[in-house]
Amino acid sequence: MVMDSIHPLVAEYIGTALLVIFGNGVVANVVLAKTKGNSSGWIVITAGWALGVFIGVFAAQAYSGAHLNPAVTLAMAQAGKFAWSQVAGYMLAQMFGGVTGGALVFAFYHQHFRATADQNAKLACFCTAPNIRNIPQAFFCEVIGTFLLVLPVFLMTDAKITLPSASGPGHEVLIGLGTLGALPVALLVFAIGLSLGGTTGYAINPARDLGPRLAHALLPVPGKRDSDWAYAWVPVVAPLVGGALAAWVHSLLLGISGT
Image (cartoon, rainbow, N blue to C red; front, side):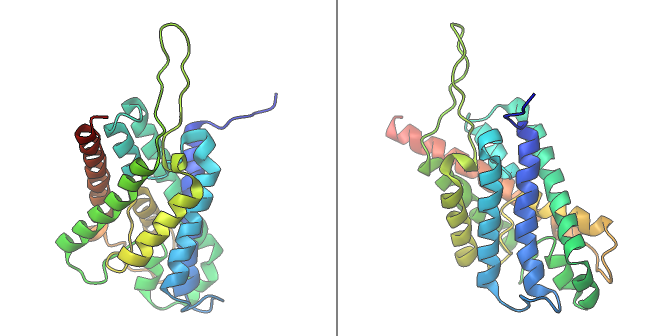
């Protein structure tokens, strides 16, 4: 029997893992010692993250809609574009994908972690932190960054879910980042990183931050510091708030337009 489809949760897991491998991988290539890309700068990091999003979305879009982000999943459910019964499963798959991606980046760059003395640089290969440690400001930045990820996704796509009807099966469109298309989403993330990423590192995705942060805490990273759990709640809660706010604003705009 030939498999012609992948379970949506498997697709979310694989897509998120790919996103983190390429995204955190480019951070490791830039900030760790003795890499070919050492000190190549912010443009390389933002480009690498954009390409990581492109790859993750392109791989998952046909099977799960390519949410790859709990904030996107929650916003889609709030907007009535995704079943609430599937939210927990998607979020767990995304989180496990984040852990896997973080672990694989560590395995790939293991020798360079050993050669690096800067503990903060090592942590940056897994998760984000604000450059100026002002928690309320960082929270605000993550809310706005995620808002500017999710709202354009709603505005740039006209895809809608058609639920099965009593008279026969309906056609269901998978809603997510993939609905917009892999390249537009990648360009959107690239723009967010270039324009708004300088304050907190633009997590804008709880799974992209918490999953690898858990990997950092659990793995034997040579000479590592603590995993900064005092800050860890910000890139989890703030993106969820930003995504929910985007869903509310989109609904408000539809109400104003009479759609």
